[in-house]
Amino acid sequence: MLTWAVNEHAEVVKRKGKDMERRVTLLVDDVDSHLNPRWQASIVSSILEAIEVLYKKLGSSVRTQLFMTTHSPIVLASLKDSFDPTLDKRFALYLKEGAVSVRDGA
Image 1 (cartoon, rainbow, N blue to C red):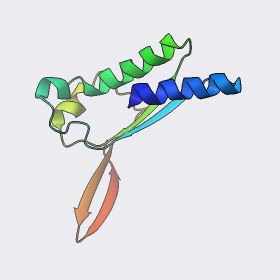
Image 2: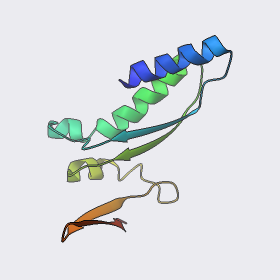
Image 3: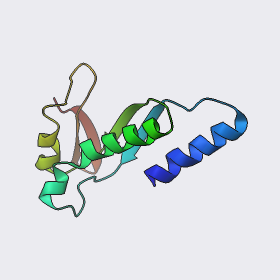
Image 4: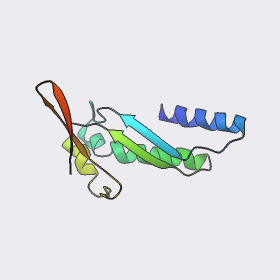
């Protein structure tokens, strides 16, 4: 789907004579869902790399923002070397008495 979306965007901007949008926001619910632990450890970096490669092939650069949910400590651990607290943020969601609250997960 990501490849399709980027390629469709490239076609539309080409037809309209405009520049590629250089910002991508991607929302993924339960990114670790049904993945082997090895894949859980590499899924986020793989998605980021795929976006970079797609844009590079089209002769453009990109800034990517990801919003992902996970239950996997493996996914979170895989981010420890690339997590920059000046740019990145982690949130924790809690369900209590039928209401969801959001807290800073730092």
